[in-house]
Picture 1 (spheres, protein in one colour):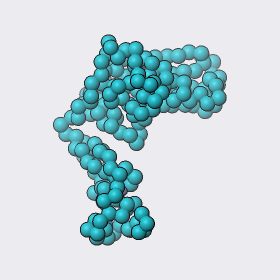
Picture 2 (spheres, helix red, strand yellow):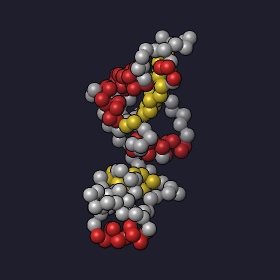
Picture 3 (tube, helix red, strand yellow):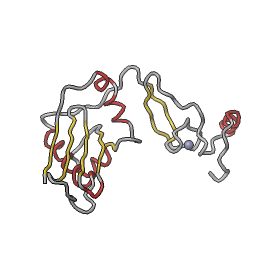
Length: 181
Ligand SMILES: [Zn+2]
């Protein structure tokens, strides 16, 4: 079985240097952020980290590619001659722990810092369920948009909201949630 670690690279594109790390580190919908890595790695990972697992059919390849502000690391686990790693050998189970251990071991030499948002990033609070503008009762989170992004303007249609928000939603033509919501 081979275990490959690919890291780090200093040759990032201008786009990545300026925008992607911050937004990727904040994008909880498409990236598995700190939580999974920290759960798998215990206290291995501090600060903002991001990454993505991958697993091929029949558990023949598993990987985790992740980053913090100092380093980007990809871990692949598999056999030279394709074969099942083991039942349930997903990227989260076999590659992520290696990644977390690597990050822990390199933390002193490559200390990570918080990602700083670029100047053209706009922070918008959205409903964590509908991903629309929040009304009263919505669980909210901060989403980050750059110039030219399509920022949601419609109000959440899942949560009730107050009377003014319900009226505004009716003007938008959005259906109101049932009273029990
Ligand atoms: Zn909502």
